Length: 385
Image (cartoon, rainbow, N blue to C red; front, side, top):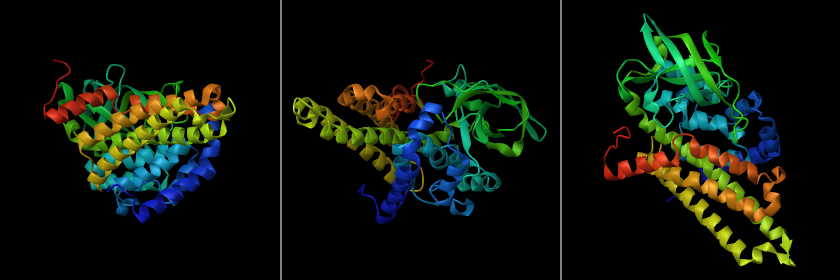
């Protein structure tokens, strides 16, 4: 049921060759220098048709099922999360929100540039006092004639300062919780928008993260993508994003497993390769089981989604399990590499750092567990009660 089609295998092989030739040799350097993916590489992804596989064909995308994009995303992310980031944003991120909920005019205006690699749209949800509790957002949006006036501070925006456009979640009215929340597109060069310094994060290096300060930023009302009170409808888009996040974690686990498999065959201690020691075998077996199970959970959700969006329960299960798989498998990889695992030269320490970042992004495993229980019991749990 979850086997790839011939066409998906061709996409996978194309992405794997590109990753091996262009991105894997540069991944360590990009991490050390916190280098953002060069624009020429983003355009290359667009020219190869790998950047916007799930966006509509009439807007330059591939019109393909979600599974196709996740297959490509995994191959690129196994080489470097920096290289995979534009595909993540285009196929599973805020561009899909515009695809699903935007007007035809908005789709024509924004999606072709994303598909061509000329523009990236980043998402801006969190604030200093609104992280997991996203509906506590206090950044305001006041409609003034044919414009929306924005004021507030956004935090933990991945890609902030680099992306050309931002889908910013704001509060349109005094209603508490989700009732007042909507989203607008803001251009990087908008008057009144400034960025804080780039965060010095444990991982996610090269993707970028910074505060965003909006001071009387004015955007046309035509750039309202999600109107006031539309936040609850966004769980469909969030489920897509969670499968993208899960796939980034899966890529870490698979890459750590691949490197460890090679290492335990080559490394010798006490006169024999370390793969012959039972404790090494047990750890390696745990890694294999975790990665295999994560992939199956992701593919189940993606196959059931088709060209639409996955079930919230299946997406949350996949994200929670894949996030924890990436952390555990990369940790075991460091242990099995011994002292070499602690060296940047072998790169598994980079994978472990990135694994923790993906677990924090897009809803932590703790929040996913709440979501899983809620979906399973068909009940909504108010965390404020």
